[in-house]
Amino acid sequence: MQARKPILKKRVLAEAGIVVAAGLSAVAVAHASLILPASMRTPSEVARLTKAVPAPVARPAEDEVLIAFEEPVPGRAIVSPFGLRQLPWEGNGRLHEGVDISADSGVPVVAVADGVIVEAGTKGGYGRFVAVRHAERLTTYYAHLGSIGADVKPGVAVKGGDPIGRIGSTGVSTGPHLHFEIRDAHRRPLDPAMFLGKAFAEAGDLPLDKAKRYSGRVRMAYVSFIPESKRALMDAKNNPTIVVRRATTDAQDLAAAERNLQNQARAAARQEKIDGLRELSIGPDGRPRAQLAL
Ligand SMILES: [Zn+2]
Image (cartoon, rainbow, N blue to C red; front, top):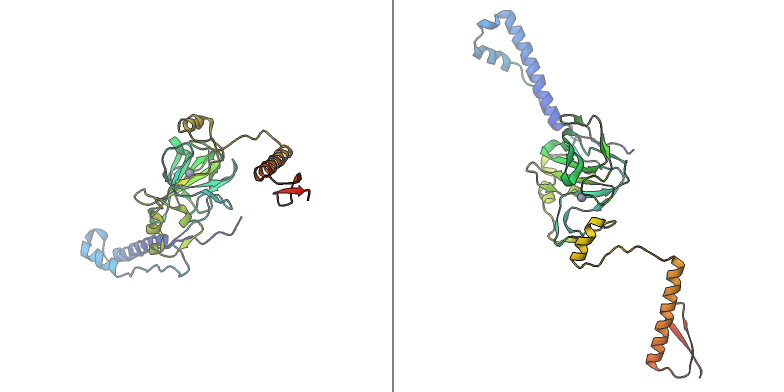
C-alpha cells in the first residue's frame, strides 16, 4: 500500500468557517438575551449584535490541495485509453468514454478521491457499478464490478483510497477489468489519464478544458479475445478473424519454418539457374547458401 496523497479540504474548511461563525453569533445573541429578553429585541438589534462578532476567516495552508486523484486499481496500468476507438467487430469508431484497467477478478477497486457515493447498482453495459461525486462537481464511475461493498450506498461519504468494490466482468465486457470514467458537472466524459495520480492546488488548475478534448483519430481497440457472440458480426463484415487458436507446438512450427526456407532456397536457385549447384543450405542469417562445383 503506497502512502496516501494529501486530500483537500479547502471547500470543507470554508464551510467549517461558516459553522464557527454561526456558533459565535449564537453566543453573542445569548449574551444579549441577558440584557434584553429575546422577544423584545428588534431585528436590527439582533443584526447589530450578530455583526459585532467578526467571522473568523478560514485560510487553507499553502500546501493543501483542492483534489487529489489516486489510482482506482492501485498499481495497475490503463490498457485501453479514452477516445474514439473501434472494436474489431464494429463498423464505426465510437467514443470510449473512460479508460479500461486490467486486473484479475476479485482485486479491490478504490475511490480515487474524497466524495459521496451517488449511485451503486446495476445498469446495462456498465454491469455492476458505483458512481462517486467529488469536489468541482466531478463524478467518477467504476463499471463491470464483480461485487460492490456492503456499505457502499448512495449518500455514504468515502475517502480517496477507500475500497468500494471488486474487479469483475459484469455488463458488456470481454474479460475482467475496470471501466473507469470521470464526468464533469454537465456529464461530459473527461480523459481520466489527465487526472490520475495528480493533485490540484486551485480550481483553475484542474485540467477540465484540456481533458474535454479528444483526438478525432479512431484507434482499433485491442481485445484480449473475441466473444463467440461477435464472431457472426465479424464474418458479416468480412473481417479476418484476428485470434487464431494455435494447433501446433513450437518444435512443429520451427520445423515447418525450416522446410519453408529450404523450399525458398531451392526455388531461388532454380530461378537464377545457378551453374554447378551442388547443395543448398540455410546460413546462420537465415538466408539460403549455395555450394557450387567450380
Ligand atoms: Zn471501457
